[in-house]
Image 1 (cartoon, rainbow, N blue to C red):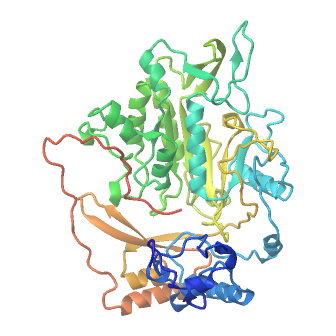
Image 2 (spheres, rainbow, N blue to C red):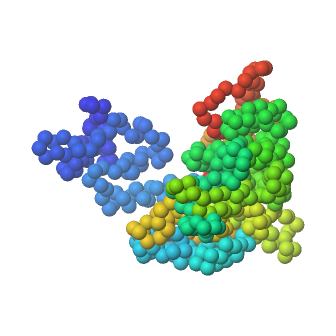
Image 3 (cartoon, one colour):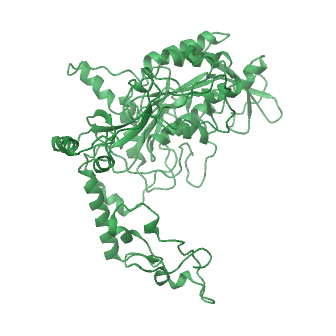
Length: 555
């Protein structure tokens, strides 16, 4: 071994010493030294071995793999996933689909780079398909369609199909929210030129904006939006606010307003997230009263607010009452405003500090994280109206005037072979992008540049069932998801959940039940470890970061 590496380590499908798998072009012809890095240890002893003795089939030497080796590796990859597919119960992924009719798209490159409503210079795309998918969801979510930027149709929708799934939609939604409420420029210009000033539409980054207020504190706080989400919200939100340099109410409360939390049960201390009804033992729906009190506190201090509602939470499948809670929030913001308005007035200034325009922005942004429910629940409403069920889902879509954006996943209830989703907002709320690259010939309005051009979906049925976490062998066989919850008595308990999807058969459920019945220890005893209470009189320490990690699921 030299320099921390060992070129004798077996590698590749044939398990030859690594040095014997290196192409001559990967060596310096003058001295024989490697131009690439040899391994430091055997990857088989480092990574989780999920396919047993077949793992080396997937190691790629510098000379590449032969056609027969690739074929064998692909066959084993399919075999591995088919093995788990037949017992798949633990996550909300519908596997009832067949997209083999799209196989020809796998023989060509397609890329929906740029804005979906403007053709780009890259002609190999499916933008016209994407626009029709978006029109479908616009109709489903009750917003004016088709999209109409050219006519400056402010009430129409704007959106795009996601490549990452709803996490990407949450990232884009909160990014748009942050810059909207703090006065950045919009695609449809909403500013009014000052009399006698040469009007220039405010740029996202080059023009200064400031709240039109005599209160210096309110002017400062208008640039500090506050994010609210419940303790049952998806973990991607904590990652998103860190990535986008936004802070939630806990962080800003602890930094700017210590020991002033308006919630009675906290005795002045700020909770990490908005409480859910019943806490960890509850159904997962946000506590509207607590949320309203928290929003009111920050609205009174002049902060714009960004609220994220769950519409089908990851682990419990809970639905926030968007209609009720959203209206309570808007009413509270109005009540806390000195002028009784729910909009802020901003001034746009040029580089010389001259006021060139004024414009208004809502003091809030309400985003609906409907990764699990926004694509399905409209059909439940249709069934209820047609007398097929008495179940009524909470309203969540653009019929509610305060809803600013919605996201849903395509690979959950709908079913897709890869992560995907839909983000949608109102055209009048979309930010002007920071660049308009000539290279692609389209405005850079989406979160990512290149985007997956293959999207399709079908509606499905779903039922959710939580249970105490079984032993590891059962968890692995049925691909069950798990999450640790802190109960009201401070006891930690780990639960698993399974989802009855369109593809779930009676045989799978019977097999699981029989396995649980036959196992001598199906539910291992869990530790009754309790979280230690804070010492009396202890003051909260100042943390470099405060990102809650418990109570989360996956996308």
